[in-house]
Image 1 (cartoon, rainbow, N blue to C red):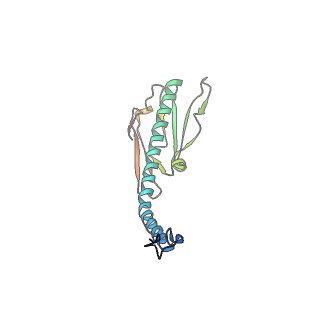
Image 2 (cartoon, rainbow, N blue to C red):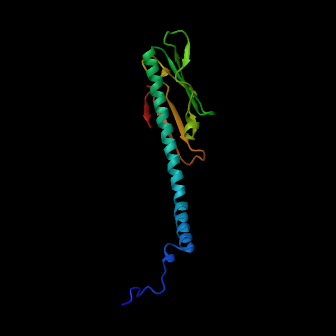
Image 3 (cartoon, one colour):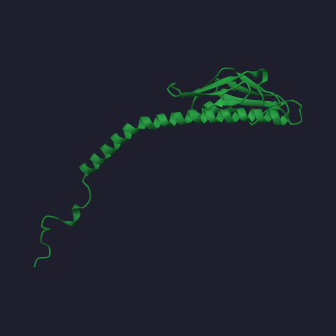
Length: 161
């Protein structure tokens, strides 16, 4: 009886994949990845806009809370050109004003464009908007294809986000 029957043409060195087989697999993977990239980019841009909106809502709450806790007017200043927000409030001792927590650059952090209907909004010691004025802050990606807004009502509350 011959032990190697049926194995005449095969040797131990023929295991694995050929170069052509590997090249075909890489081409197929490349095509699948290329088709998925635009969707991935779109969802990243939508996520950036949502994060910027959440950041703005947090800053509004921070400005209102500072006005109430310190018993003085707090001003939220928005610079649409630079995409920054700064909250100025009286010092704890009451002598002068200070920028609370530094200047926050939402546009740079989330890679969005920020525009607002007013350059600033003030909150009185009750946490209400001074003069009962509202504000809309809009965020969009650089191409403008993804956008959303935060609306602050005349009472100083974020009503849509």
